[in-house]
Image (cartoon, rainbow, N blue to C red; front, top):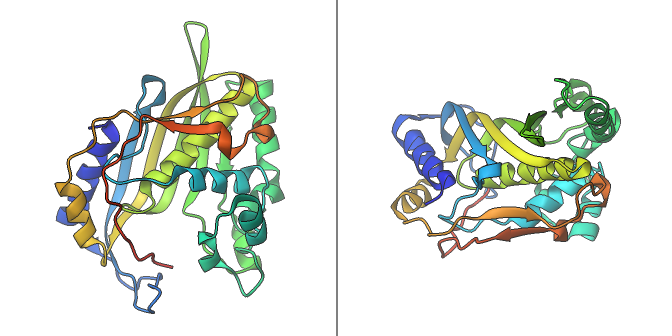
Length: 279
């Protein structure tokens, strides 16, 4: 059992035992029913990536490749175009959040990254002074939200810091998320931002350090309680998965591809569980 498995089970149990039900929920299931959830406020986890602690459960398979492609779409392409996501990466699940037939997700995610030239600024700051304390990615842009409709960003803030230990520089990252679907998206979001952390570290030839993960509203939807109990009853796989970025040191951030990542020693418990997503 991995650290992530322990945290996963503890969070599921906490939500089922201590959580409260949402009121006036925004999301809907595809059949039109309101998607209520049981939730807790405030969840924090710390993973020392340098010691092999990765935020991915073995209790069910987690599709990492599509998650990494989404990161490239947002932070390399800096795009909100569904056509780019489909044609370049063959990822289709964002179609449910298309805005008004525009073939975009509105002024969200990659559009905000491009608007503020966020990645160029982060890389410039880290190059000029790695120890600066201003390496913040914020996708929460009220002006952009007023321009168009669209899903407000869930994983909306990322911060980066460096540490030097025995001559090696480690890049740490903190992901803050306003809302997270514990069973479906939790490890997908965590691992895709670990991938982003690894890309920035490789850009400078640094090592990956620690990953800190804070979620404000951590929830399980009311059509997922059976799956939640199934996960609690599963025995974790005896493996120690880790994400590897197979490129030379100091590879330019924008040259890294999805196929450069490998998830090794990952043998999750099957069968996969089915979830009806809340839109």
